Length: 238
Ligand SMILES: Nc1ncnc2c1ncn2[C@@H]1O[C@H](COP(=O)(O)OP(=O)(O)OP(=O)(O)O)[C@@H](O)[C@H]1O
Image 1: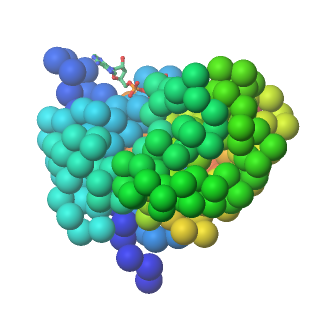
Image 2: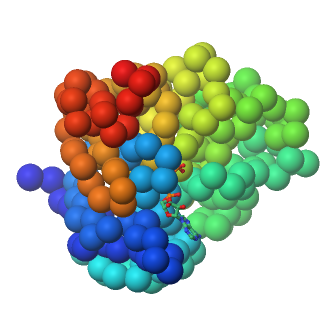
């Protein structure tokens, strides 16, 4: 079986009386693509923040490739080889796409290598036609794709994405699906996402959160057909 690249054991986060993430045991193996879904307030973002180091959990542990990373900050987690995209944009509007990706690569590589890496990422994510366009002039879907470029610039073996398809058109979602599939050639990927069209298009295994805990984990088609999940998560949308 492939190596476990991300694991949580009893991961818990309390905000006063609210238990946002409740004793979550989670495992992700090399090469896997996993979407985290669930209704609003189910605890997905809190789980994501505890794993990426944006929050320090109040209980339990996080392991990445066998290193215990509980309580590490996002910079430490990234330095381990983990690419993180939060909901807060990370782009510089006055710079073009190539420059933005180059700046991201520069955190890991010397100047010339970072230049080469930026060109390679642009090729890999099919960003060539907009490589010399300033970020401020790009449409929302294009900006989201560039954000993924920043993530892969560090050659991560684990990628953690919070809502990469939020606010995108159907065409953008399709392009984003292609990029995510491409990413899984070299990294295990975890995605917090609401967009079911996107989740279905990447034909992913999903982990369903409900009231801070894991309700079910299975292929998206089986999860969507499950009556309990439909009740708690899809409700009237099913
Ligand atoms: N900083 C905070 N302080 C207090 N309560 C919080 C905080 N962050 C989250 N919560 C609470 O924790 C619970 C889980 O929230 P969380 O944002 O993790 O859910 P979610 O599944 O990501 O929801 P959404 O899909 O709406 O983003 C909610 O009850 C929320 O109100």
